[in-house]
Image 1 (cartoon, rainbow, N blue to C red):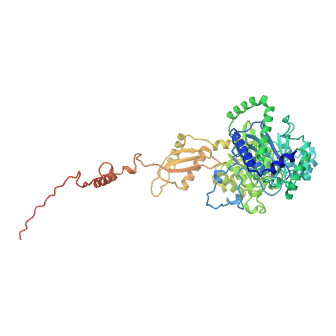
Image 2 (image 1 turned 90 degrees about the horizontal axis):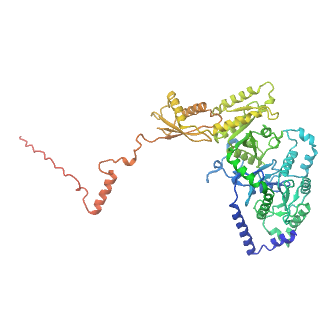
Image 3 (image 1 turned 180 degrees about the vertical axis):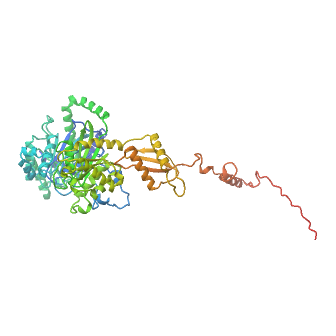
Amino acid sequence: MWSKTFIQRRLFASSVKTIHSSLNHSHRWFASHTKSASSSSLGPDSLTISIIGPPNAGKSTLFNRLLCKESNQAYRLTTEKKRKFRKRVSSGRIGASRSVKGNTGGAIVSGLAGTTRDRRESIGRIGPVLFRMVDTAGVDGDRLESYFRMNRSSRKKRGLLGGTLESQMIEQTLLAVRQSDLILFMFDGKVGVTADLTEVARWLRKQGCQPYNRDDENEEMSSLQPKVLMLANKLEGDMWADFFDITNTNIISNLHEAERVGFGTALPISAVHGEGLAELAVIMDEISELKAKRLSASTTNVSENNDVAEEESERPLQLAILGRQNVGKSTLVNSLLKVHRVITGTTPGLTRDAITVEWNWNKRPVKIVDTAGIRKISQRVRDHEVEDLAVLDAMRAMKKADVAVLVLDAGAGMLQRQELVIADNVVKEGRSLVVVANKWDLLEETSRKDYAKGVSEQIEVRLPMLRRTPVVAMSTLNGEGVEQLMPIVFNARDRWERVISTGMLNRWLLEIVDRHPPPLTKGRSTKIKYIVQSKGRPPTFLLFANVEELPTAYLRFLIKQFQESFQMFGMEVRFSIKRSAAENPYHTPSSNRNGSGIGGSTARKERKQAMLIAGLNPKSKNKRKRKRRLKPRVQRIF
């Protein structure tokens, strides 16, 4: 029974020897297994785990705890690092309204119930096991009722519009359950079994889920029937396990009552402090071994084919969808994928987490990221920090992207200042920019071509450095013009990471300088000798000249001519000036002797000091005595 094994373990944990031996055993287990783990991409037959539970049970906290930071790049970026003694300054209109702790690539966590809405997938890791991990929205009785209230025909008719928010959240959770091998069914251990938890358990049983029995030696993994493991969260330390403490009787009774749900014994953990995860790691290692045995016949062939495919495949395109609220970013993602993947609706601010979806377009890998709408700071809700965290998550997705798509709204009539600020930040970050002019169907008397031309002219007038940026006019709701986006996006990435030969660059530079020579700098003629490309992504070039800096106007002229010649539109072209060496390459400061003699004045001084120490007269050595010429005395006769 659970009470005999678990309570005795917690009750006699006061023994120091027992504590140290258990900790050393867990540390040795993790150290021996972590070395063999790899952060490579997972195959289609990898272990898939979903985290299900009622709202505010700690699902996103456990998701961030199990997140593999190396595989998901969930670490602080270089541009996010601040100096130690510098105050944190807001980044204008797209910064944070308060000093919030920046998100490092994980799910957004807050004390507000219902923070998570979309289905977020990432690579997880615990000990030696790498697995696909899915974070889902909270499930309760009201959301299940709203989902089943919609009949199957109405769900088919809605298309990309979705339906109610609750029904879309339950639909995404249902897809996660069907794709999972193991379901971590979480609940608050201090609250216990509630009516919502019972409804969710009944719903999981209707989906064919079965409890995971660890004691059964004949346990086998079946892809058609996911296994469920119950987790009692928010149980920190061992004090609550004291059977004789009256204040802890409710928690122990809650754990006993959880067994009546029908999914076996609940494992007590603390997602915030990471307690109880050692036992979870052992269970997940056993489950992965069971699945490996089931797929042992085809594992070797599949792994070899996957390795070859990974070597031959190109790097995935990182695509971030940015814009203001309610401009159609999520609808654009669903239109590209042709699947209702993310939540959509007419209510502004539905998307919170940056949802990454792996996708193949014409057999070319793409990682498309749907982000939250970015409002200026004065319009945000100040009661909680969820929107600030969503904006920081969106800007982080932009910093990791190759190409950023800025979605505009035709209903606004003209470019908003907030959209210009987002575009300016994209370019200054060194990303390539593509503009999507959405909701073209609202303009009845304007053709799609004229609409795109008008948007391009507005961008050129208000941001001259972004002139001739690619603009695609479309209607994501009707699917008109959506197919034209991806060829332009791949073309933008190819131009962004292009490497130009040094010979071609110097021929271009010679032609430009001959037509328009640089102006004088501090009364001195400026000579630009040659140019090289120091790096790509973004395109960065190094100009060697006889001055330390060029006039700003002439530097802008060079950038404009370069963009015209090499089609580098919609991105920042960075020119750095480096002053070349003197005309004589062998000229060094030590070559100035400032006098005669071998070694110069410094060597003569050293020789004089050595002679003085030896007691010799330095003036008498190697000195020619000059004879005085005596002037003849002229006798004056008076």
